[in-house]
Image 1 (cartoon, helix red, strand yellow):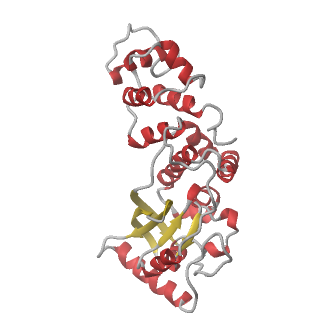
Image 2 (cartoon, rainbow, N blue to C red):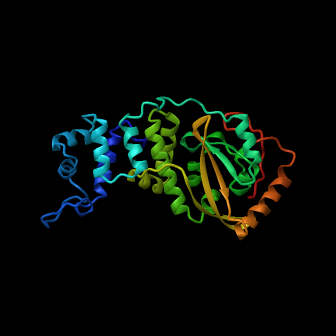
Image 3 (cartoon, rainbow, N blue to C red):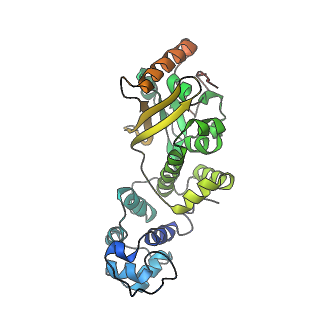
Length: 301
């Protein structure tokens, strides 16, 4: 099972979004008779968008490329949020800036130094949520990334397939579908990325939750949130996470976990930082995924 972007993904996305709306959601009245399928019908979407049913049907079936104004109208009709509108435009090819085949990513030395300077767990995520670099505290918090094979060094793959990582997230039911929504957006931006297709295929086969959430076609952009982690050394931590885009490569994201000062989680992070520093005081800088391992971070298992 691949990403679906080369098999009328735009039409499937429109279909999924209209299935999630009722006539009452968009101000339509019905005759009260039973509807065979949930959600809005094609003719109802077309009427609200002031286009013909034939036109909309051909767009949804992938037989006609809609103009940008029509897509904007459909986004309003289907009540798409900002992330979903971006996804729609990506699928329709209206973002001319996206690369057709993404090149290999490298973390700049300046960015690696920044990781070492941050007094909190931090990683650099690349395309498809690949873990490109990390600091010792991130390794202490989650896992020793340097001991993982390159293919396994991917955040979404770890969340779904690494039993230790999975068990650490008390709010896994929130973390995991968020990963799927992030990957959905990646699939629109980089539809020709074979490694992303392979990742989606592997996880779809191995995990029924991933398969269900992927089919739901929810999309999101990584921004910020809260994660609750059950750590074997320091116990339960409630951490805020924040994502910042790297200026030199917009496809790289700096993700940092922090705790509110004075809380037990903040104290636990301080303890973990001391433990990590004691275990890696003589070790070199963070390890980028595209080069030989440079750091053997602490391994709390």
